Image 1 (cartoon, rainbow, N blue to C red):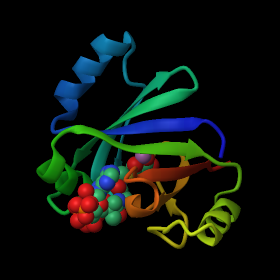
Image 2 (cartoon, rainbow, N blue to C red):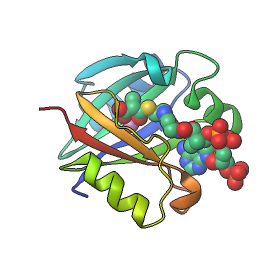
Image 3 (cartoon, protein in one colour):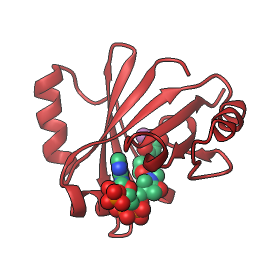
Image 4 (cartoon, helix red, strand yellow):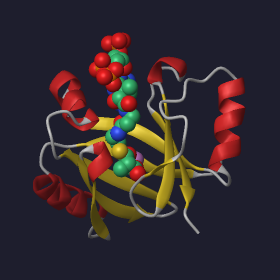
Length: 133
Ligand SMILES: C[C@@H](C(=O)O)C(=O)SCCNC(=O)CCNC(=O)[C@H](O)C(C)(C)COP(=O)(O)OP(=O)(O)OC[C@H]1O[C@@H](n2cnc3c(N)ncnc32)[C@H](O)[C@@H]1OP(=O)(O)O
Ligand SMILES: [Co+2]
């Protein structure tokens, strides 16, 4: 695992949260991107080596919609940059972590991603990200 690539924050309104985080961080988001497969619209802020990823659900079945319904807005996941996502997935599986997807999937911000089930990671949803070269 390399550095924390981003912290995912579930929000009800990207518009409202974009302006709140722009004030908080003193920077504007550098991109907004929809990820159909996850049912989310994302907004990214660069904060040093790490990013803040705001996520708004685009449909009621989205994991973000379910999360907000159950827990309200807030920190949703921590993403780590990895060099080689497939070998990391193999390593983590052998260590007993539960993979939520067996094959890396296309995420936002030019990444291949994989998620680990929170019940195997101290109730913290962990995402692995490999930059698509
Ligand atoms: C764009 C992309 C990117 O960066 O590239 C993204 O980040 S997309 C980000 C959105 N996509 C994802 O999150 C994909 C991975 N997430 C999932 O597959 C799902 O959200 C699960 C994590 C499996 C939870 O789904 P499920 O249907 O099981 O919901 P559930 O409410 O029944 O949750 C089952 C248990 O997990 C816990 N749980 C649910 N979401 C959690 C979270 N974010 N952090 C920590 N715990 C969480 C619940 O409290 C519950 O615990 P108890 O049983 O103790 O009550
Ligand atoms: Co993410």
